Image (cartoon, rainbow over all chains, first blue to last red; front, side, top):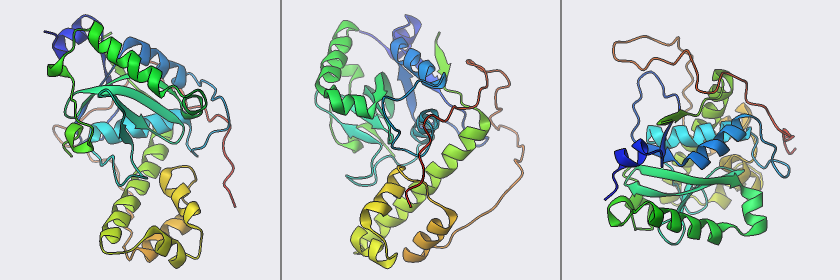
Length: 162
Length: 117
């Protein structure tokens, strides 16, 4: 049965960090697949969006603030309209900024694994939601992840304790 | 690689997080007022603006100016607390890394959006 430390040790997932304030400790955990980390590196290198940006912040700033609010335990869901986290089918969750969408799953409450990141416009234009759901389910199966490292609920309270 | 630090430069980080924090504080106050019966439509009417414009500001699609922040605080009956402090050093604080997994580079602003007037 896989464990989080085992998945990290064999390179299946990588822990993702951002700088927190001097008095802050991470209240949630964030991991990503190596493929997702490569995508993050492309964003940091200034990857060009497919169209005009919707948000007024640069994509890297949007992701930094998303990761910071996730890791520092800030509220992520205010109402249906204003939320940075949203449930998909198949125990897949989406983290979002105005221009970026990140898909993955929760291994445990407050512990997210990011698998895919992409521009919101591309995902909407090509309707990639279903493909991402299927690919994430397949990845979980390949990693041998069953009930123990996959939160099944689809309410924010099921995956976030704060 | 067992961990990856998503590392944008300090200047871009400070700006992005400040704006994110302001939006979250506003949303928190709006949800509190909504529970007391204030709709987003009524909030927009108080501000004599369109609801869609307020939503764009709150979602991060449009920048919130200081004037707009003050207006929103007025409409929500909230005080704004502003303080600039020197970072204090205390035992047990996190220490910002001097080296980076990717190198310090300013976040490149791609196709900056003009504010909608």
